[in-house]
Image 1 (cartoon, rainbow, N blue to C red):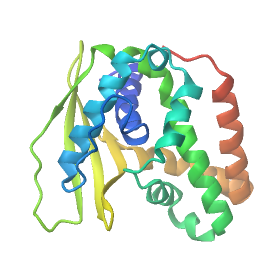
Image 2: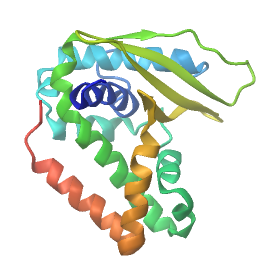
Image 3: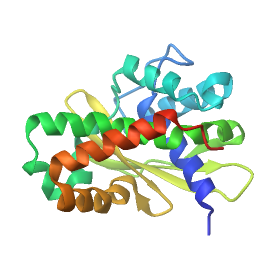
Length: 215
C-alpha cells in the first residue's frame, strides 16, 4: 500500500497541474484541441516550474496562490468540480453561496497540497496513450508518476467545452478527488447548512495560510 505522504505528493503534482498551469516556465500555450495534449503541456510546464523555482520548492503558499490568481485557472472547470463535490446540495446554494464555495474550495485544494511541492524534484510523469473516440465529450487521460518508490497512477477527467478541453476531476490510486471531499461537505451542510460549509472552508484556509509547509 502506498504511503499517505506519497499520495499527497502525487496529488500535489496533479493539483498544481490543474491550478498553476501555464506561464511559469514556458511561453508555449497548452494545446486545448486534444485532452492529452493539454495535460502533457500543462504538467510538463508545471514540473519544470517546480524544479526551477526555489520558493515553490519551499512551499511558499502566498507565491503559489498569487500565480493561480494571475492565471485565472483557464484550463480547469472549478465550478463543475465544486458542484460534483457538493452533490445534490449544490442546487440548494444561492448564486452568491456557489461563488463563495468555488473560490474557497479552489484555495483549499491549493493550500492543502502545496506543502508537498518541496518533494517533487525527483518525480517525473509518464503519459499513457489516450483511449477515446474522436467525438467523445468526456475522457480520462491516464498518467503514471515515477519516482524513487513504486509507480503511482494519476488520472485526469476532462470535458470538451466550447472553449476547449478542461479538467474537472483527478484520480489517485482509485480515489477520485471529488469523492474524497463529498462526504465531508455533506456532513458540514447537514450540521450547519450551506453557510456553515462556507465558514468551515474559510476558517480552514486561514489555518493553512499561517501553517508551516509540511514536507
